[in-house]
Image (cartoon, rainbow, N blue to C red; front, side, top):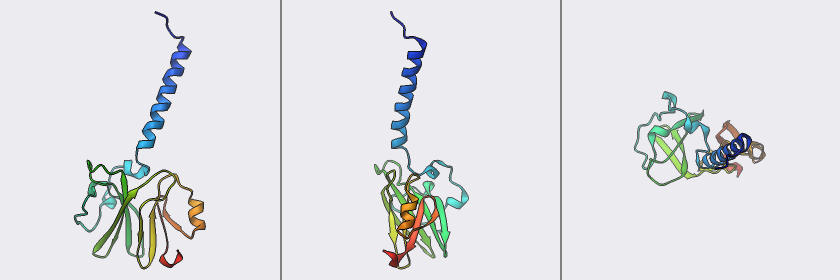
Length: 148
């Protein structure tokens, strides 16, 4: 039985690992912070039943003017590949879930004051700034509601 030279075998192994890594990366979360352990700061103050959201997945993004912004994922087994943006203010929590793809803004929440947009790790933040958005976190941008 012929054997491959060591270099050829190594090349095959490297190509296989690269192909596996590229496939694995494209199906993983596009928010690196979702891979981190949940800390006390990541837990919503308002403990409410948010239908379909895994409360163990919430991650704090930023706070501005008494409003806290979080990212989260749907409950396991829901079949959804969405990522959720949660806005906690006063006695309520706003929620919007949408697919989050590399390079494209995701869930958006608008109220009378701001438009908040969830961002993947790899998006052109300069383009967002040109559209009037302010980055509060690498995964969150806001702009005044009347700006567009």
